[in-house]
Length: 161
Image 1 (cartoon, rainbow, N blue to C red):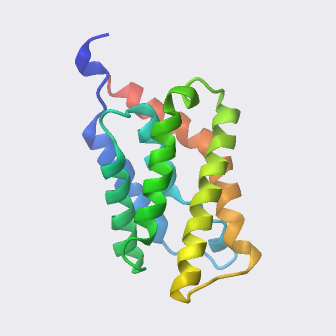
Image 2 (cartoon, rainbow, N blue to C red; image 1 turned 90 degrees about the vertical axis):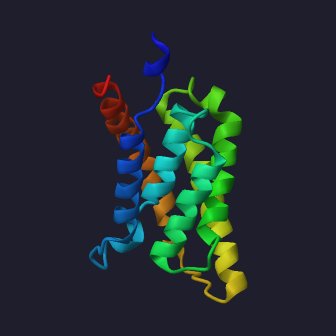
Image 3 (cartoon, one colour; image 1 turned 135 degrees about the vertical axis):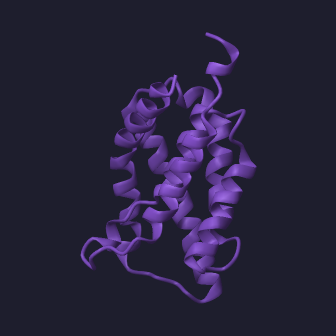
């Protein structure tokens, strides 16, 4: 394999990030909105696994700050959660890349749960606590979406070569 084939397509990374931002704020019906997975966080985890040298913690923080701005929350709330998930992904990426997809999904479930807990904690500190059980539904939907996201982005990434 040539050296330039291992590098990601920055257009594909940018397109997936913009898609994640749009999917984070597009209106959904009231019944489906609690199930909305954290698309952008899943995309950050994916690119941190596939291209750890090109996509780092600054990328995760920048994506989190973009989500803070788009959603209008406390500046840094999502950025801190994305930074934590990006750090854990970078720390475990050599192991996670060898996991079967169902094992990756369980690891992603733990990262999503930690992220949601951190956002829940920051919401509580700022006085915006949402304490109903539906707050934790995006963890389940994100975990179920992980294998599909990996297959789609892997296919797009292989298709460019």
